[in-house]
Image (cartoon, rainbow, N blue to C red; front, side, top):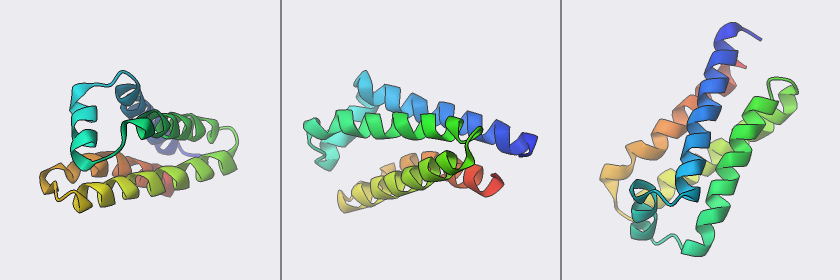
Length: 112
């Protein structure tokens, strides 16, 4: 694995992990839009857990590549779902935010 792949994967995992932490601590810039999109509060811990596991899976994938691939696929599905959720809520100005997480995941997978 190249140095670029390792660096991008680690930075992506930290970025996604930050997103998970933001859900867990109920940061206003995260949970207010979730409420606006109609995402039920009961789903928020599951969303944070999915992101945290995805971030951990990306890091584990540095040692066990199939785990990284599975985590990357899961995160692509997750953030694609986030884009769809934002579009369905007609909150078009928020579309770039899930893309800011989706893009590095795709790049990390491409480099791996």
